[in-house]
Length: 360
Image 1 (cartoon, rainbow, N blue to C red):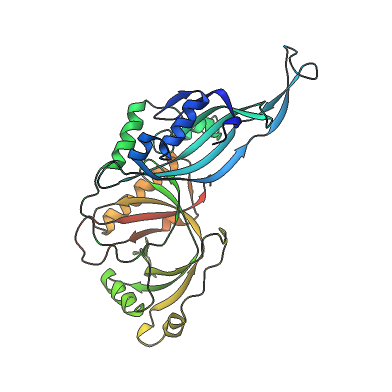
Image 2 (cartoon, rainbow, N blue to C red):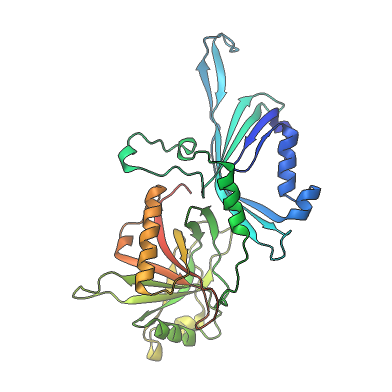
């Protein structure tokens, strides 16, 4: 933290904390980063991913007070808005839970200081508790400005949101494989938003899910597939020519730092040589572009009614928070399973909806 960037009486507000003064602000940052005695006891591994920075335009405005340098005009710097995701491990608890927050920071600026600009205020909002629900009846009057899309809540709500992430997970089912990596863009109220890289994988059609697992499991021996298994089921069973259900396993993904539009890596040579022939006639090599998806996790068995109910719930949440699915996504449900087949414990199943409209 560069103290000279901040006004001496800078004001900071987030859902849990309200502070005044650069020393208090710095102490708060250092505590979260584990640089104070309390922080060293409580926290570990704090990190923040910055997704976007907007604002900060310099404009001139007339001033009736005549206080401007040019006889009535004064310089105004518009608020800077950042979107971010913060993770921190609470090491004071034996099971070392990780707390995750995403949201926006709105910085109030004014000319001054050694660098020409001073931060005089910062307001943080969390996506999980501060977002203003979208109302279609008020759509014409609702601003898309982050300052209008978020509102304050009582600190009890924020504390409950934080403490709720610290509960022990209990006995979880064994993961089937290492997980396809992603960047968490939003921890929302009831859902997440993630950015996945492009990847090369294998895909098969199936009638019964256990058959799909058996086919891909036998095909992928020695290829080190990744979790999750991603299924797509179309809502056209009553049509004359219903589309087949598909199951996809990721194999290789684009390396970090290659950019959002990086092409998928080449699939393994043995996958290319076997797919589509002989006993592997139903298996195809697939390349998937990087994408942003909304995700709702549920623990019920991944049977048709439970999956479709989770999909409906997620679509309602996306409408509430002004996120737009891709065209045609209502024609199918897409869901992901992470656990080894027949494993015991709490299972992890998710419904996915790819997004076309989002602020990331």
